[in-house]
Amino acid sequence: MSAEKQIPLPRPTPISQPYWDACKEGRLTVQRCKDCGAYTFIPQPCCGECLSEESEWVESCGRGTLYSFSTVYRPQQPVFETPYTVVIVELEEGYHMLSNLIGVEPEDVEIGTPLEVFFEEMSEEITLPYFRVRDAG
Amino acid sequence: MGPEAIEVAAEDRRIRCLFGLREGSGVLERTGLALEDRGVADPESFHGLANPPPRQGASGPDRCANIDRMRNPYDGVAIVGAYNTIQAKQLPNWTEQGLVLDAIRGALGDAGLTTDDVDGVNISSWVTRINSRTTAQWFGGRPMWTGVSSPGVEGVLEAAAAIQTGQAETVVIATAQCGEYTDRESTVSWTRPENEFVECWGLYTAAEFALMAQRHMHLYGTPRAALSEVAASIRSNGALNPDAIFYGRECSPAEVEASRMVADPFHLLDCCIASEGGAAMVLTTAERAKDLDCEPIFILGGGLDRQGMSYVTAPVWDRYGWVGRRAMKMTFEQSGLTHKDIDFAEFYDPFSFEIIRQLEAFGFCKEGEGADFVLEGRIRIDGDLPVVTNGGIMSYSHAGVAQLLQKPIAAVQQLRGQIVEDLRLHEPKVALATNGGSGALFCDVMALGKELA
Image (cartoon, one colour):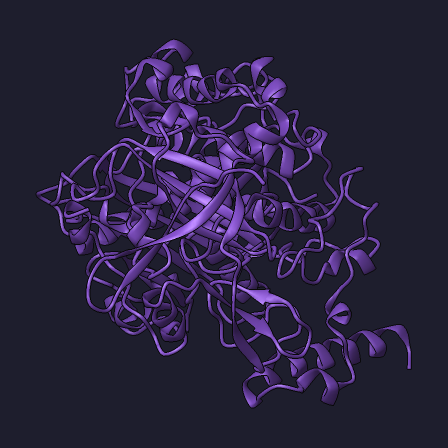
């Protein structure tokens, strides 16, 4: 994935740093409210359900389904190799996240497909969580 | 306490609750409120359509639910000047300052007013960051009120509120964008996200909106042909508009589908253009407008629907797909209008799908039936709800932020008959203008008319 190493990489903030630290360890994490149990993604200073500031980072199972997608032919920047498929993944915990789907031909991408996370080290600081098709069962 | 006092007390609690957030957690306990108290959607009130589902962060307060019939809060205001500068893909010989000044002079001239009349401004630009405070100087220090809202539906409603409450009598809203496009290899700079959870996946505005469209097509079986029909309808209007950048560029549904793929399902001609230009609008009191040598256009109602930052979180259809519905509902409640009263709609048209979405979100048809609506030819210039009559941001111009103001301007010009005959509707009385769409997580709506309702 040498070409992809030049893509624009996340610049963590104090709020998101724990998330990126966990990615480096190969763990997908998400904020969960200690008061009401709701999941919040992307990281926020408070819970989107009850506004509590008491949240904790918990590990996500990293499994989900393909909620929506777009296969992109006109890249955001030339450094992105086309075509690439942007997806919204609905995690089993119920929250949604953006990522890329890897290893599926554009004509085979289908909403509802079971997916699982895998990690690619992009730099010393950043490891990105990509998704691939998960064998059912 | 009478009903009014109770309403005020409730509002006071709500505001304290919101401001209390900064003080830390536990605020809800201190105010004795649960989140539900911020407002409960009435599931039966909006023309048979359900309100946005109560997903986390999705619906929020529905202020209309407790109000039988509002009155038009802008009934003392008139739009008296509307003007677009030259528009082009690029304007290398212009500066934003020059465009803004040209727009202001044009709009004041249209209204028959001078700098002496202006006591309020909302003036901005994208690249060089012209702002209201500095431009108050351009008017020799005359303005006393300055607006801060984006120069579109939001800014027009803000200016109208300032006039209605006597903070200003005559307000100029102006904006422009040029000098932006230098990197042809990448998508337009302001369509590229910077957020750490978005940028690295290669997202940009077209892909964000495509994620919404794909989900809708999956849920409702929305056919590709409907997207093509929308793009062809709008681009065909622009082809007839001599002021449009794509003037003369007739477009069929087949041509839309034959254009290259950008971000599935959007082909190139499903997407709006990127261009440069300026625009301005002048508003004053309805009383003052009577003395002017121009045809005033009135604001009949309007509202905002803003669910968060654009291009930061995943554009999840089930949470944000119907954004704008609350703004439309507010507009109908204030104006007393219904769908049948709308003669044409200057809808935000960043991508073909957004027209289908707005028709459904606003209740012009049922959820999932927007495709049938457009495939019946109803949004064509000779249909029963012509949409984007000047060619919009797909064909007329998409000058960055100026396009926000160009939606109400398009409505004003069509209502006044100030458009080429081929695109002139037969005595239209009421129009809608909208800004923002699902991928951007905001959608503002206003109704404009030749007469106060």
